[in-house]
Length: 241
Image (cartoon, rainbow, N blue to C red):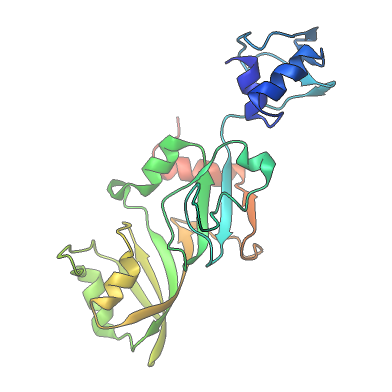
């Protein structure tokens, strides 16, 4: 990797700013001053320092966000605030992206990373990774709905969903439920309930597989995934060496 690309990726400025930084003589590679932006180095082997501080290189970033209901799951948008817009600059510099999508008005667990292979494997229906949601429903959810969801729901376009697990948390005209699905069709949870004559009025994602939303995260807050959480995601997607 070119040293100017490495330093830019690690947040030391634009390529132009990094070139000026190198020219100033404040960058060292293996304790030798390096001024050329074109030199190629192995970031996992070479020791790079800037102003005397060692650059801790890492290729990937893995974040857990408690997504608010007023931002969209995208990297950029001309009108709306995106989940990337609320990241700190030192995290945004890795050029991460949301893993899958949550609707703009949906809250809860959203993973953000720049690891494209892991993101793809987490979102493909072939892996059958369950995503669990909590919802308020306008309409009474009954045991008949539980059985319907277990068999698969026919959506408005004729698509029949994979079997899902529906749990009634609170019955009544305004029911509260938990639902676990293993695919992610457009507006799927909302369309599943619409197919049974009901409306989702609040939706929050609680978990992906066994990875739970950190209860200490307020809406709009995020943290880096712990090593064991990253290893778990790699394990369930068969990325573990």
